[in-house]
Amino acid sequence: MRVRSPTFFSVNPDAEADALTTLAMLEVDDADRAAELLTGAVARARASGDLLAELRGTHNLASNRYYAGEMAAAKRIIDDGIDRARAAGVLWTGYGVGADAV
Image (cartoon, rainbow, N blue to C red; front, side):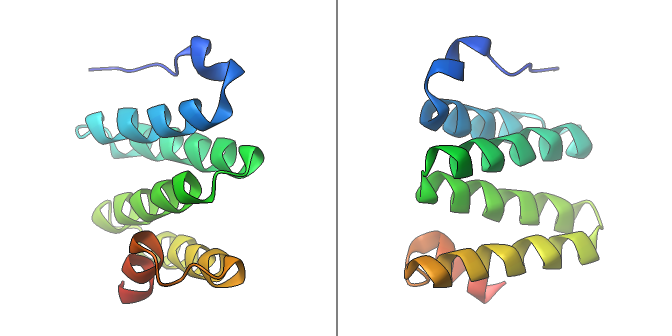
């Protein structure tokens, strides 16, 4: 199944970031396409200031790269997520703690 980014979310970056993350999880047969969607989700979440959506997308992107065998990329992504959560003072949250545990 090929899922395209819905253009109607472009007026609400928070909703678009969440939608892209959810759509990426549906791309189980195409890890690179899922990574593309997750990268877009993280960028949209960061641009809109939605830290929780950004950390969720970062966590899923790191997991995606890990399971695709891209260990160096997964480590870089998760390290960035940990730094982001720590800087925002939310390392204790679900995605912050989850990132730190990886």
